Image 1: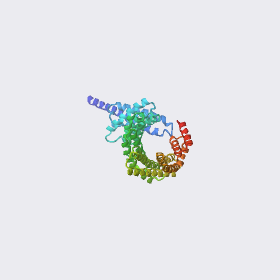
Image 2: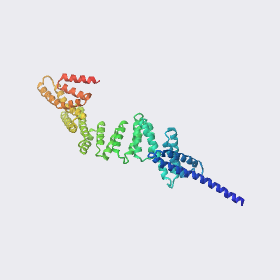
Image 3: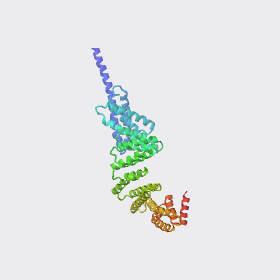
Image 4: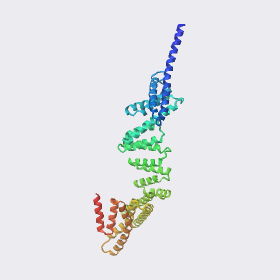
Length: 426
């Protein structure tokens, strides 16, 4: 009988010990919940801040005891509470070395909680821990980014992204940080590309801009086909986005796809007829096509082919001029449109001028009409050349065009003045 009573006593002792440790676990959970509620109201009532901190300290003390006891150490609730408590400690700690220790403890406990919680009984705690860890890395990344420590920012944002793989903000921040880090260390560019490519598969509200940014990175790594493919895909998804259309035109011009882009330019203008920049790019497209053909003209030997090509060049310069004029109807002070319109109007004048000067001395009757034609053509360009100089008096391009005008008009005095202005800029 004594043995029987002794065994009952031992069983009772064991049960009491287990209950005590579960009590620590319950206390940890209760104190954490108290902290969570109190800290949420601490901004409105500052005196609650001390109470919140005390609750968190109590929660840590209890969860450490529960984690150290073999009876409760591997319970799903233990892992969940510990992840939430230590995530809160990491957030609260302003010292990076110790806050990182708390973060790592929380991160490891969170992994264990997700694995152990097969019945989804601790979802709330797991979600809270996740959010706190996300916030920790987000704030750390923002601080690093603001201090231009882009590699550190990338690492923090990427950790944030891994905690929440479908969070578009996390993906975007990671991509932006990687892009900036890539400016000093190109190994980060593929990481930026990967994250941007992930982002455009989502419903992120700023995806039109993402396509633009992604195309820029492709150009940075000299992948022109990737840049053009990306921007074309963007235009297909967002056909009314004028900035994407503009980017498509820019890349096409940079990659020698002028002829391929004309339809896209016209479509963009139809969708946004008051966008001066689109008319400017249409003008630039036509003028670059003409410039390309002009380089071929001198190599063409067949007379009929040469005549046809010359006419095509003149037609494209005229179309270019018409587009620039439409841009200037919207904004008369548009510098680039004034500059380029002066240039394309002056091109036929230069052709006539050169043709006249290439004639033999005994062909004076042909020389005089050609020079008169050139003079009249130069005068068509003058208002736009002058406006460009007025808008940007120190622009080397504007001054060079103005000097060429005066040379074409045989006004050597004014040409010399402009030359002096250009020399003064050097």
